Amino acid sequence: MEQKGIQLLIVLVSIAFFFLVTFFIGLVSYLERKKMQFSLEKERDKLQFQEQLLLAEAEITEQNLKNVGWELHDNIGQLLSIASMELGMLMQHERVNKDELAEITALVKKSIVEVRSLSKTLNTDVIQSLGLIAMIDVERDRLERLGLIQVEFKHPEKVEIEQKNEVIIFRMIQEFINNSLKHAEASILRIEITEMDDQYSIIVADNGKGFSLHDEIRGTGLINLEKRATLIGADITFHSVLGVGTEMTISIG
Image (tube, rainbow, N blue to C red; front, side, top):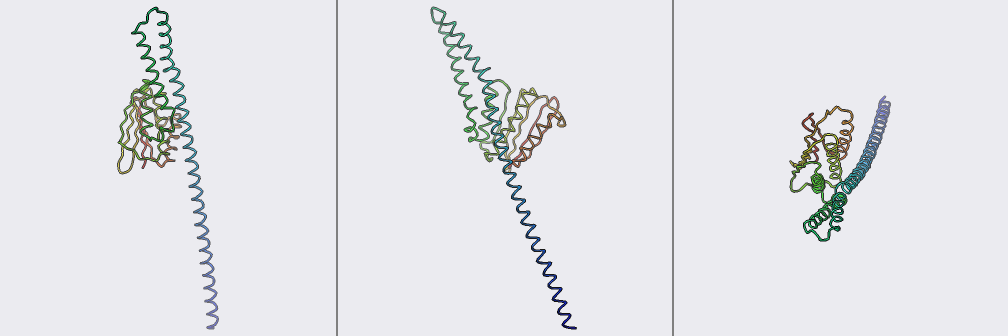
């Protein structure tokens, strides 16, 4: 009887050990699967981020090229055309009028200044390496130089955000500006960067027509901005009042 009890105990211990080993193997297998799944998701997120970064850089370049084409045709082209016409008229005179010559010289000098400013816009790689503040400064100078909109830009002396994130943030700001010019008919744009407890807030606001946040057409643009914010681990909020304007806030650590 005692021997049967020992045998039964051995069987029970064996069964318990079997279940314990099975549970341990299952747990290790589950953890390995979760680890692999996490690695795959991390790699997917990394690839998605790289894709969006390249897309943002391409969009910035495309926007810059559009700006260049417009400026060459409507700004610098007009300045040089006027200078050329005045030079032609001056050449018909027997004597050179110094005042007219000075006016032509001033137009040519202004054209040179415009070309130099334009070259900054074209040199995207250099601007990006200088950081977010420099990128916004170049954009502000362009907008104000062309009389498109008045821009107020406030920022701390230094902004420490990863360069790859700065590129995407700048593209988001460009998207907001394009909407302000094309749809909102804004005359004033405010850009402000603040820092608190290693957290940056980038506020972009206009005094345009405003819109309903539930509008389907507007909603598509907002979704795109929200996706980009998620990719860089930022929070984004919108506030818009019809007839008053729109404000976008990007918060990132």
